[in-house]
Image (cartoon, rainbow, N blue to C red; front, side, top):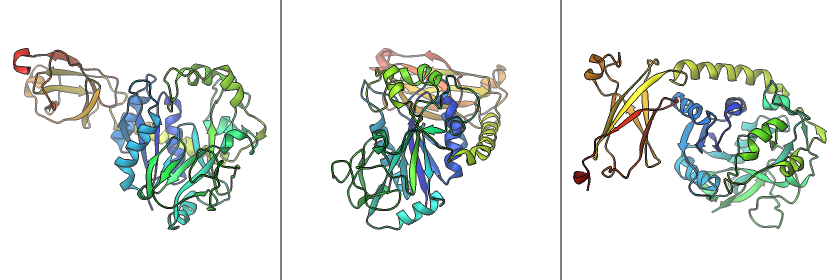
Length: 382
């Protein structure tokens, strides 16, 4: 059984490695991450993790003011669903938790073998700030150990683990099944709020078997500086999650230390993954790149301190193309611009580029932006 997790990330830099390592430890086999284009370094980190093969990154910018979350989910369901037996859709502030002492994969294996089961409905447990004003040291699962009461209405929301072959489409919380039924984390039939076959809320909260720890606000500082102005993945980019949102979700009624047993192993895993990013990708390397844009062909070169393989992230009118850097450029070597002969690349666009088109380029997994030179014959392009 292969188990994958899909998510969409924007400005989650401090939390990405912890989230990945934790879910690796509990049995996730594959990660599919929609990159909603961040300005805090998250995008470059996701690119580097993609270079390592740790995740499958999908370029997914917001288009207009519509929420990108549901389109991203369905894109990943269609593109990657055939690669896994089970696929889970959660956010960067959500952690899957086995609550009955069983290994997560053992519960999922039983679910996988239930022919009439198409999806699992897993209730939230919303965690508050634990009284923290500032971010401080430590992991998310280490710093926040106070949560809402189980029967709080917020916790009736679900997240979904599904069998891709049985699913018609994915919403933000629930999926529409083409066959089979929803079951709970305890592998009993799910009863939804209004008795429908699929809804975003259950009639009651159940933590038997599997639940989702939802670290929705974190510290007051993290909420004010990051989440408040990030917009909504499910809705408008202009949505502000301000004081009222924080106070409504800062629920600290009960102690819950269920994930503290993972802290040591997660920290070791994060350190190891951070080292891989630093040494096995160009993520921390200085470099330079040049792009020459002609109507029918884009060529150029790229070089960094990193001695492994490189890609160019080419953006043409906002559409992303990843191009291997592997062509011989003795002219670049002769000029002393690169010590590596195969530092060149070329790309043939689907249609001729004109003066109306915008071209940008970066070395994939880095902040290195290429200098772009346009050599356009307008008459030929027309």
